Structures are given as structure tokens and as C-alpha cells.
Image (cartoon, rainbow, N blue to C red):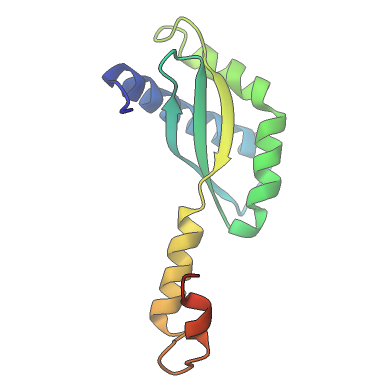
Length: 131
């Protein structure tokens, strides 16, 4: 089922504000060398749950930081509610998911640049075949 315009608008507002709140939390805790962006926020039809897809670079720090975000979810929700109090009556429950599309793109670039060139090394073709 496709998202309604209302869901899209609320998702956009939450995406922008959640990105700002996360950046502020990273600054407060002196976390450097990590880039965090909120790539998408999907809101359920009843507006009770907001699924935030977070992209974290470098990817090796992603799982640890995602767990930290889940741990401070209530703090992030409160900050977000303060920012959106004039736009939303009720703040949806937040849930965080890892968006690994940057890592996927990076792997494609490595393959294209020839680090794992199947033409030069035919043994790589077996692992690329779908089973």
C-alpha cells in the first residue's frame, strides 16, 4: 500500500528534525569521525510508529552506533516532540533501522574499479552466481 500525502509530509518533517537531533547528540558526546544521516522515515497509516532508516559511515561503526541510538530512543523522541509540537499532536514511537545502501554502493564501486575483476580472476564468478 502506498503512503498517503499526510504520511509523506510527516515523514519528511521527522526526517529533517531527527537528523538535526542526532547531529546535536553526536556533538554533545564529542563523537567525531562518524557521519550519520537519516535517509528515510516511514510513518504507519495510524501515525503511531515512525521507522527511521539511518545511514552511518564508516560502516564498521554502524551496528554499535545503531544500538546506542536505540538506547537513547526516548531522549531523541522527547527532543523531536519539542521541535514538532506545533505540527504534530502526538509523537509517533521511533524505531531505528540501518540503511546500508552506502556500503552497497561502495562494494559496487570496488567491483567496477577492478579490485575484484571477474574477467582477470575467473574464480570470482562462482561466488557471484545466484543459487
